[in-house]
Image (cartoon, rainbow, N blue to C red; front, side, top):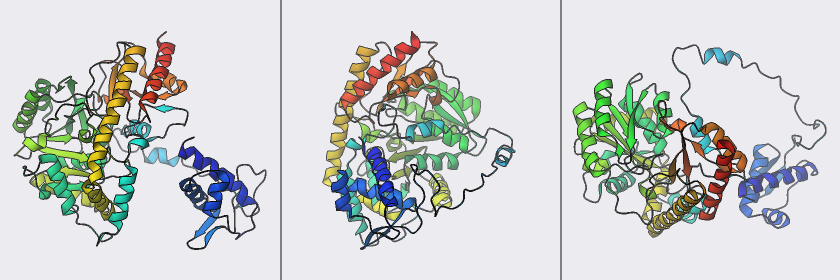
Length: 489
């Protein structure tokens, strides 16, 4: 049983126990509850927090946990609790349909794929959908130690500079451009993760109603951000070597766009790496168009142990401020370490700063201090090597299983990132297949949301990072085969 389900089960047990206690009675200690219910201290702490949030108990530091003076009825009770308030009158929310639809223009930003990516699957479902590494791949001890040290740093709870801590900005500059490279701390803005950086960049560099060029297929989160900002995503097709320069130039000519969003390294979802000859061509085309290139370098720390040397970021070879570079520590650590960086030069950086300060002021300093402690720890490099080896093993398991169970669906695969892009036979209904896969006990992602316009063919994206072992990746592919056979006959 996973920890989440253990917490839910223990909270149910404690609700029933609390009902038998007089008001104000102290509950047994955490140690007693740990031994009695055979769970970890962390599970006890989280279950008690659930009850406290419901108003059933109150925690008094140094004294213990006590039943409150008014306890809500449990799901198992037959009647109303004597202290329960009368049921509230259901509100009439129908007015919101008018209010939210009164203005002209599309209202749906397409956030459905984002919810699908962030939802936690049932315990009996294997996750081949998630965009974050499994908890077993996260450096929990390193993170805990970094947080503890960060809290003791002088000034850790003072207000940070708006742009971020100078030391952290300097670290990102070296990480992106190399030691002694073209970037300095003054070119970097610390953000609350990669998604926040992407939102800031698109909102700052393009005005509502303007076109923005995007790779096709592309990351659905970028499409959602663009639509929420009132921008018009225009697709530019990708092949095995990345975005096609001829079509990129044609798209700039046709739209007069001033922004191009791309993922040159281990592109999501295709996994493509922009080829060496196309790198310079993309920058030349953007320079001619007077446009910015937003480089989402999300997967650089997800390189596999068997990968060849990586190409430099586009930003490292751009003296003219064409490239606005995005990077983040989140993918390689934990969904909760929401620390990212935007790199830009000139007036563009000032525009980015203004957007961030209006939206959120700054990134909390304790989190920035923890990030500094993490990347300075000798265990950071070891963690990245371990992560690279684990992702390699999961990729190999996925590739081997697909070749055995579903031959013909797998195209080229890369030595980095966390996903594979499967080409389905023409006429396959992705929605029906993903629903059948869920019934078979595996969560996968349909390809349609990755296309800003009509897709040329049906696809599935299969993510192997969220699985807790290579064996579970292989089992997920076996379940997918059963769903595939059920739906394709």
